[in-house]
Image (cartoon, rainbow, N blue to C red; front, side, top):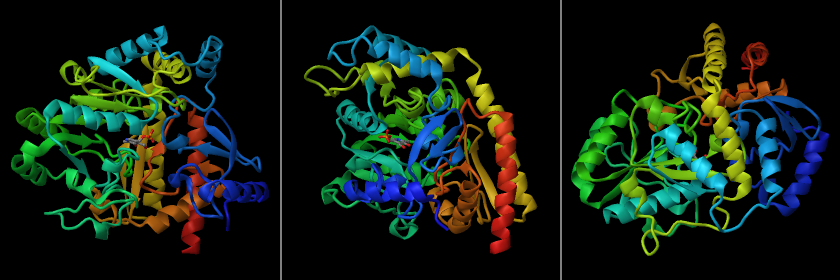
Length: 438
Ligand SMILES: Cc1ncc(COP(=O)(O)O)c(C=O)c1O
């Protein structure tokens, strides 16, 4: 059965005529019968063209931290853009936002960008310039954006392409990358202390950076093992490697100061996007003074016509003000915990083997593995098909997480206990229905 109602189907067909596969990002393509067309969002809800309402847990892949069309953010943007949107000069708003990020995230300096990809791309350049080295480590299953260098061994790679655990192969996840690029990328399984230490000790002279998603926001929210981020920090300090905490998904979400605050580990560089602007396009690279100051005229180039534009910056100003002053995270954790525990209980009662992952504001569950997965190879042994069946049953009942279990469930400030209870009732019904049809 298709997820599309009649109007959605017709509009999607129209989209396909002018937009490849009818979507502006491959990640949004669920097939010709199930790709949605959405007309509006408000708070915790979105509506499709057929006017079906969904409780939204995709939240646009994470940015919507407060809620869709959150009034005070929208108003701040509307007010600010009355005086223009772009000047190619510094604005007072940019200074205010940078000061907030410095204060909230315990970093020295900040440069704004528009997307997470721009932030990680620049972070890699800065790290290379700072160290005079060219290669970097990334972990299997982690995603750092669309730039060529990062499109290896993400959660989109088939497990069979990864090579042996002892000697992993960087597996390209897109056509169109020059073959030479892979020689700069060293991939490792996450949470494997031994492989990390051996690799850094053998190759540190070539290593500019270690990129890490501190909690695996693109792989069901799998957590770092105790001491793993600290180990990365220790090795980076010992061998003069730049530790890049990619907080595009965790930043401002799992704590006011993101994963650096939550785990108590500071990167040399940090990348932010998503929750920074509650759905407006804004991102940032931040970090330690000595590393960030390699950005200089005649030194490391960073820029872009739209960096620091008034639309995104005003949204960040309003969003961060709320995140800094109001008990948003307490709410995300309390509602998220009820939902996460409730799902855990329903799956247990239904006799479906599973493991819960992540933290209440960004969590997941993996079906059908014996052990709790701690890396992508173990995650890939899970039962994706059952996961998707349950999600389709949820969507047909008005609850929308992503159909792909690699993408976590996201909470926002507009989810409340009543919405969570409604979700759990629907979840129980969806699981019952799927079980009957198995
Ligand atoms: C951890 C991480 N880094 C980088 C990116 C890229 O960000 P963007 O899609 O804004 O380019 C993403 C996007 O999902 C991400 O999750």
